[in-house]
Image (cartoon, rainbow, N blue to C red; front, side):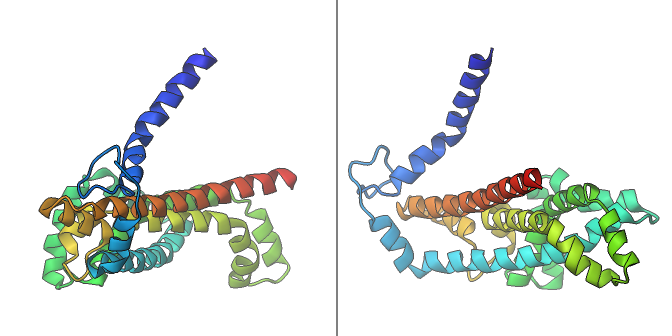
Length: 261
């Protein structure tokens, strides 16, 4: 039975990783078309990527939007998580449902709504519009992580600190924040990765001057099968993989620290 489950797990993992096993080698191909397996290996596609402002510009935009989305998501998600876990107020269930709504509604529907609403506010094709839209999509993920961490947090250590004269702000800075810091880091990384990888919203909200890397990849592939897109795909995959690796490392470090304590 164990061997069967292991074999099924291995086949599932191989199936999920199959596109990556094609895209990454193809990014080093010497062929001018998108072919697999590559007839030869070269770094020309990566040189073309980093030498072309049509690619480096969207890459920089993705970083800027991702960082801004992460900061705004944490700025909104942190007090929202504390309110949902530690406070009682009228309409709490409805508030929680509205925040989680972007995870339920199809992304294309959300994109159309953002386009119509942001168009009235005149923030379509601006960094602000893209960041706000990405924040709305990243907030539910971050909120789930933060609320789960707060529910498992032992509040008795906070109460002990405040009973010794510490103010709420000092208690948060010296007690709550150090304990929950890994959860904040994981929430922020998920928000950044989600923003960096988001395509549908960017197609509707970002313009040519504010294009993100996924949008540029879609546009490039629609116009012509430029082999540079394979290098862009590999870079995008590397960024997502790096974020997930950091999240995994933080979780493992936290688990080891918990066992040693």
